[in-house]
Image (cartoon, rainbow, N blue to C red; front, side):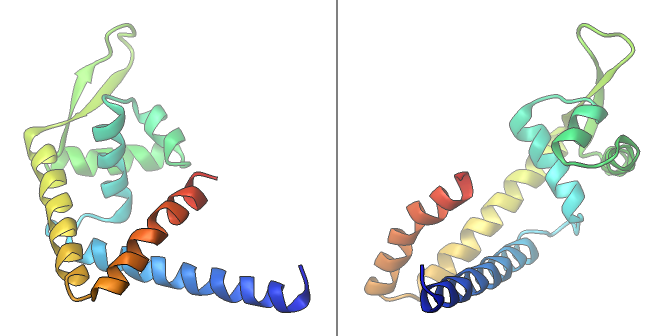
Length: 145
């Protein structure tokens, strides 16, 4: 790579970072009727996708201390989003699972994101929609690398 290419790549990376950040912030604001913070939303998503989890498992998955995760889980439990259930093989541990309210909140959040993004994308012309569709595999590939 030459200097011109390096500079161009840096500009692309910088612009992509800003654009993705802006999109994520907008999606969060459109889909957060309960005003949960990002850590709470992330914990709910982990439990939804990973199934019942202990505090330590969630803390590891989110790269945080178990004490910090414990506070997040306590707030979610207080809000009725999660509940405790006994660990099937270790009586000393407890698992956290989504409640009906937690499942419904996740569903509403996903619908709100999809609806907002659909409305925003409907303002694009056919050529812009094709460009957006063509970018999806590239963005996915970068995310998986």
